[in-house]
Structure formats: C-alpha cells, structure tokens
Image (cartoon, rainbow over all chains, first blue to last red; front, side, top):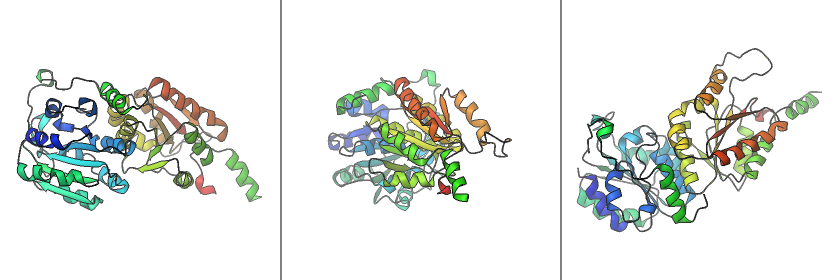
Length: 195
Length: 178
C-alpha cells in the first residue's frame, strides 16, 4: 500500500501531453501537474460517473491519451461502465483505480466487501485486454513505461492509503480552484475546440 | 386491407427515419443509449449510419456522464433512453449535465403513455413530466412525423440555453410494425 501523492509524482514524467482526469487524486494532482489546462480536476460532480466521463472524453479525442485516476468507491457505483468501455476499446484510454478500501471523504467507512474485491479481475472479465494490480509503489512506478507505452484500454488497480477527511464540509480546505465549466473551457481552448 | 390500415397507421406515428434525419441535421456524432420498448428499427438505421457512433450503456445514469465527456471533447452526443431510465438518472443529470452546462437532447420513449384512451396500468409516464418539471428540464412531446419540427426546437433550445432538453416520444416508434 502506498500514498496517492507519491504515485502521482512518479506518473508526472510519463504524462506527455495526455489529458488527465485525476478523480479523488485531484487534490494532490493540482499541486503536482505543470499542465493545468490539460487537467480535469472535477471533485465530485455526481458520484459514480468519473469513468463514464473520461471514457466519453477519450471517444471524442481519439488521438490524445486520456488518463483517469478513478477510485474504487466511484467505480463500485458504476461497474457496468467497464462493459461499455471494453466494447469500444478506446486505444487512448488509461484507467487507473486508487483503491483505498473506503469512502475517505465521508469519514473512512469501508466500501462493500472492501478487502476482498479483485477489481482487475472484474475489468478483465468485462473485456479489458490489459490489466495490472499493484500494492507497492516501486513496482507500480516501474511499470508505467509499459502501461502507457502500449495502446489502451488498460486497467490498473493500486492499493493506496486513505486520505480520510472527517471535518464538516464547510471546514475543509478547498483544493478546486476552477468551476467545472471553467475546467472544460480551458481544456477546449487548449485543444482548439470551438465552444 | 390490412396493408392499407398498416400504412395509414404508420403515417400517424413518428417514423425512425424522421428521428434519424433530425440527428443528422443537428450534427449528432454519438448516440448514447439504452434500448426502450420499440426502437429496434431505429437501432438498425442508426447502426447503418456511418456518421453516428452508438454507445450502449447498461444503466441510464451512466449516459449522462458519457455525454458530458463527449461534449467536453467536442463531440455532439444525444441520449436515447426510456422514461424509466430518465428517472433513474436524476443525480447524474444534476451533476454531469447541468453542472457542466451540456447542451444535450434526451430522446425519451414514453412507456405507459396513452393519449387517446384511459390511463394504462403502467405508471411510468405519470411520473415523467413531474420529474422533468422538478429538474427544470423543458420538453417537447412528439407523436407523429408532423411533430418533427419540435425535435429541431429541442436541439436549438439546448444549444441556446446550454441545458439538457427532452423530446418525449409519445407513441414510441412502432418499429416492429415494419
């Protein structure tokens, strides 16, 4: 098990010009990334939709890599999207899951069957052609060239420490600096997409 | 005699060709969908249309997030689902469509709708319009090819307001009458 922030730092040199949807890793990624216009730090628009959103983005931008840092709680709400992604097999889609075994933003309550779910097996069964599982930072970091160097879709699940938040929402530090609409507008400007 | 009745009946309904023409007219690139009761003929037409990519989802709420991602990347999605699935999608509509100001059109089969007779036992349609009103989603009912301009109204309104707008297909498509 390792810290999300450490993995994101290891990922940064391998990013290239990929679009990054940092999911629950967003609060770290906004400080690490040096290409904020290609980042989509969304927080929590509606839980269970990050993979579907990033997949839609990958379909719309097939020539550019889309890297998603999903979470197991979000994915559990929408396991069916694995089937849709696997059916379309977007070669530019890289699906990482940060598995902290709990709902960290609500106080750390365990997700259903937290310690016994093999998400990589679920993805494989859904039809993802490549899957990986990591529990150690060194192994996960060392595999990044291979993971990102071959076509997607690829599914990578990693055991990470939970960044548990137990304060009332009004007392938490806000890490998102842009609205969802601003985030998308910046991306579209960067990609030359007419709004 | 049966053929005449069948043709007259078809004229009174919304044909799948009309829906497909509307999708093409408004530059739709992706149809994010989950089948409703009578859209098989439309499915076959869409599948044969090279300008469209069909994205099937196993649960309707997922369609909203997929559509938000597509629109963010510059594509033009439409969401084709049944009213039951629309109601299942509530929080995704709030977060992914209103939150991102996605100008998307829902084309919604109105299961349980019956304009001319008594209420059907299926309660789906009774809840659909109150649901749309609660979410402040404007909608247009279409029941025949003569209503096709209302689909254009929906697309134009979605673009102008940057909000989702619904087209309610009152008598579904009757694709299986072919």
